[in-house]
Amino acid sequence: MIAALQTQRPPGQRLQTQRPPAQRPPDWHIRRALELIA
Image (cartoon, rainbow, N blue to C red; front, side):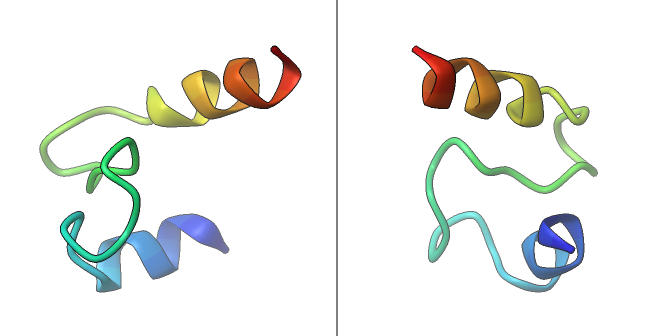
């Protein structure tokens, strides 16, 4: 669900940590989880 919105919206409007999977792999998912847990 988030991935779809992320691809539609540019990284400029969304959080800087959330970047399109085209440029970066689904790594922000893990970072986001770690940040939420920490």
